[in-house]
Image 1 (spheres, rainbow over the protein chains, first blue to last red):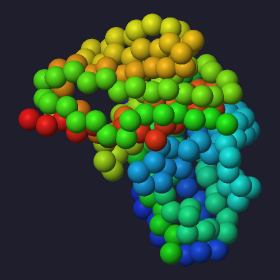
Image 2: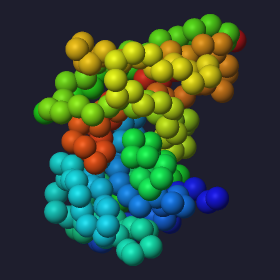
Image 3: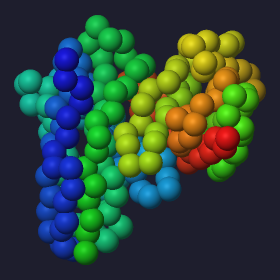
Length: 114
Length: 110
């Protein structure tokens, strides 16, 4: 049973560029949440997708957008990258028969903006 | 606003017991979770408390007092592999709108 997978593992971009990160949830899960984790900090909630719609959103600008596909996989898009967007981006899945309160995290995508 | 407070660092001896506290102030509350994160790794779910009291899972236990907006994670029989960062997280908006604390870095020494 594959866990949560994310791609790519590492990414280097320059300011102003756009980036797309991908996530496949754990088998049986239907909900995907995205987090940003700066070095030495806790993960910050970006948004959550369920049934292909954004269900909850944290305090992030509209430059951060996402999508969920019918197979429950998800993308996180960040436009007009800033240096401050450099972080580890984590995807977490939950739901289905597993119950809602347990989130399973993927290994993350480490984004560096130069 | 939402805020969670945890000690930034804790050091404990192998085989001992350590308690990591978390106090929270959130606009809503559904439950308190604990996660472990090793350097360079992803957070791993440890426990979830929705009701007051103690939940035990092997060497780890978690406690919640909703009236005090307080919880703790108790690690017993510490092992070197327990050296990691531990985060408390509050589910405050339903549908897991989760706010994480800044984390407690636990160092286990021989």
